[in-house]
Length: 137
Image (cartoon, rainbow, N blue to C red; front, side, top):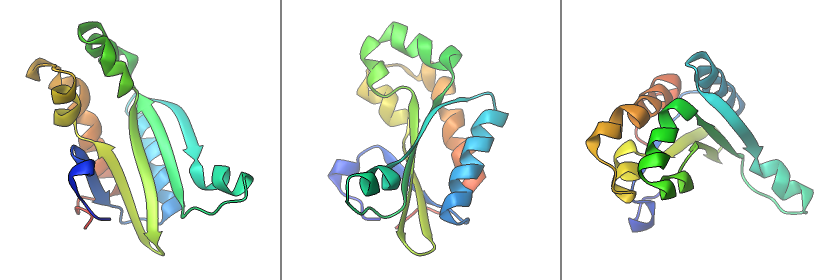
């Protein structure tokens, strides 16, 4: 995965697991840590449904209303980035990556102070712990 200015605020980590297992592990980890999975969108299947092809790509929307609501109360436009999202892609066979917005980026984007960091940062740590710690290149 390449990085440029359009990826500002996006963290990408390489998963040590195959694509389907990465998605499964993330969904299970979110649930076991009290995070609600609002939707899992198989974007590859959606592409196939309209006659197009797309490498394995799944978007997981997840969060905790107890954590996210105070951000939206403080700055209603924060709802543009909530619930949180994890994008699982496979750029080549066996090269699985999970990408997500950094907590710092979301807070800065919406002018929210550091007092909200504890509402978002745990999700970053959970994703890294669930799939691996290597930055994607």
